[in-house]
Picture 1 (cartoon, rainbow, N blue to C red):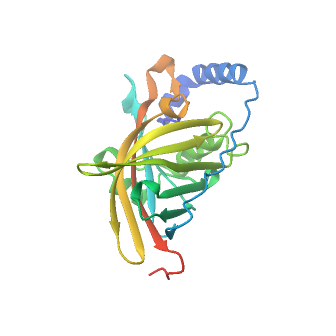
Picture 2: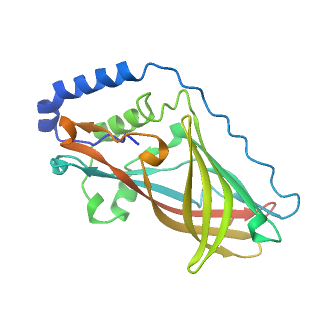
Length: 242
């Protein structure tokens, strides 16, 4: 993803002309209209226990890192998924279970202070409101996620595989008009009324069909690799949330 790197005012002044040139080049190369991808989820198993995602108790974070010889002038970022919705159907045979998740792109948040503080020393710097707003505006804009044209990111299960240290899920994810398949490790806890799935994994811009943001001929850029940390809570359909 071409997540913007928040730079110091001095750097912005020095790189302004180069940034404009990059922006103009991006506009010229991105004029072709690409078709949107429609990804209706496959039919869930006819039988199975149904669980509904509890957005209030779930958390999905995307950690985005600075990179390049001048990386010290930029900042790492924490992107949080909000308004998550989804359904899990647990079949008698685990490999026949199915789940799907959706969230609105314009509900993504950027660099909430309490989330930054919880991610460790790499995220301890304090960012101003203007810098955060600028990062989020670029993220939602046409050059990156284009929330106006592609308002929803969709994920769904394709295959469930057993592993020595938990399950591994083959997942289809649609971002903008690009569909990708990724493998996600998951630790699953289940009670009579609740499922809790958690884990973390690396994800790259290239896998999502996106190019990391870069200025000064790559001297200051966003790293291709991102880190996803998640904890999803789903309640049995009809059960009351704690």
